[in-house]
Amino acid sequence: MKDSKFLRALDLQKNSIPPVWFMRQAGRYLPEYQAIRKNYSNFLDMCKQPKICAELALQPIDRYGLDASILFSDILTIPDALNLGLGFYEGEGPKFSNPISSPQDIDKLMPFDVNNLDYVFKAVEETKNLLPKNIPLIGFCGSPWTLAAYSIEGGGSKDFNKTKIFMKENPDELQKFLEILSNACYEYLRQQVLSGVNALQIFDSWADLLVNNELNRFSLKYTQMLTHLLKADPVTANIPIILFEKSPNKKIVDILFEEITCASLHWKEDIKKVAKKLKNKYAIQGNLDPKILLNSDESIWDETQKICNVMKDYPGFIFNLGHGITPDIDPCKVQVMINAIRQ
Ligand code: 1CP
Image 1: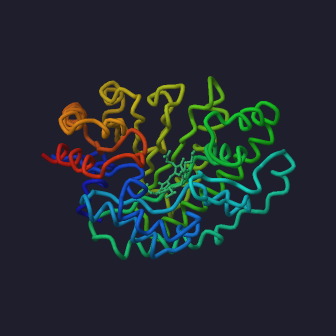
Image 2: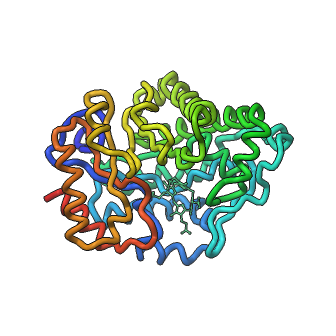
């Protein structure tokens, strides 16, 4: 794909106008998404319809002319494929009917079969068919740690207390589970690449639950196991990898490792400081605080331009939010941000 500003940035090249896409760009803040979503009581049933997923992935591309598309799916498809029984029902987040409650549950897990996620790979193919030829598609997965946290907790949570207790009481079994998840993520991403994705993003959305050496021991070690597998495989070796760590207790510059192409910065990171350390080594994606999109147009314009100005000479900059967009954002405010980037 020759004409992609996004892929050029991942190749550490400068673009006169930075490419832009944003985390959770398809989803609940868009009325066109809600119009389709209302036909499904369980969100996962919608994710299992490849043609619908393709249509949803295209919605923000059609509306805003973004420079990259992200597969419409969810990170929790892997624990669902391990038979943990995922459902998303009215007014609730994700819930597992069969969570990991004890070390025995890990021993009893059925082997991961990537074919159970065929609906995702079909969604990749359908999305590629609809996308303009110069717009790349990003595939993704959750980090092994983040997937383990949801699997043990049985769904979303403010504090993930069950997970923290499980980690303290059963660290060896947890590591066994993390290894299973690392291999599953590898097979999952490999198949996404075979189906047509052009880049990969790993979401470590619960990195901030881990303190001190726990971050290395339970998260980064397994993300790295995953990226080693990807780099050792000729199918995936040359696919750029973007890493998002949500507000880890360490700075991103102290966490990154060789296999990563691009750091997706959380909004709490100081992009100017990070850019100084990462220049010519890693691409950077980020990092407007999504809450800024609740402010006045002037404020959105100023904050967006601030980031663009800091990054204007950085080889490999991709404009993004510092975490996913939230359902309370007015889609018109997103347009203000995009205009400020492209002005
Ligand atoms: O009710 C609804 O309409 C479902 C809302 C929704 C959507 C639109 C969920 C449930 N998932 C998604 C799609 C999704 N999820 C995408 C593709 C859309 C896009 O980005 O354009 C992606 C990339 C994700 C990734 C995802 N899912 C993450 C990582 C990113 C992040 O925000 O940190 C996480 C943590 C999830 C879990 C999840 N799925 C859905 C919800 C509400 C949640 C969060 C649960 C929680 O912790 O409370």
